[in-house]
Amino acid sequence: MKTLDREALQASWNRTRGHLDAARARLMGLPSVDLSATLEFLEHNELELAFDGLSDDLDLPLAFWQHLDRAAREMRLCSDALHTPHLTAADI
Image 1 (cartoon, rainbow, N blue to C red):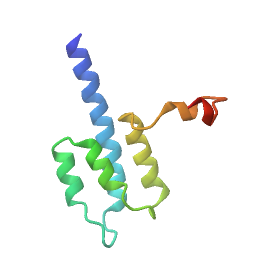
Image 2: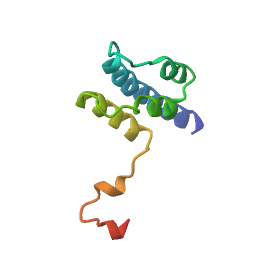
Image 3: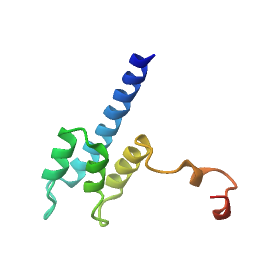
Image 4: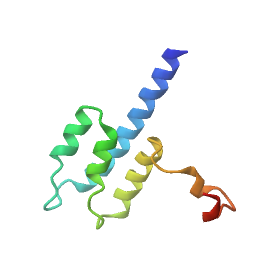
């Protein structure tokens, strides 16, 4: 059972890494964007820190944010409660 859990975790990390790499690729070549810290976090499998480092600038293309959204969902950084039908703020 532990092997399967480890394999599932590794697959999730790989999907997250793919989303973060795709988001990072959208930033390459943009002026005043330093990706060195993000690359270091990715090299050490610190995916949440890499995510945080990529999400500093708000004025970026939609495709960038779509990749970050997918990475956040893969890491379960966002709540599914917001997507539940008929849920109100009082329910949260």
